[in-house]
Length: 69
Image (cartoon, rainbow, N blue to C red; front, top):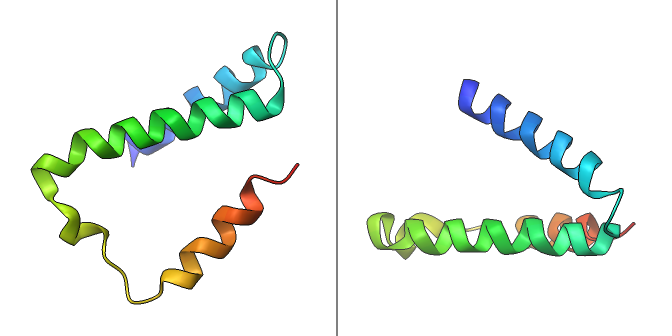
């Protein structure tokens, strides 16, 4: 929980600092790219089985709307 708290805090501070020089869509793209790279790094260890879900739609809808300004 402490790690999650630190990462969320670091993300909030980073976004505020980046907003001075970058647009919000560029920052969103970078966040998504970093998350994707981290997921790719974790795949060899945990495999794709840990990513399977029975409720795919419940994950897709919030993902679509989180990219809207």
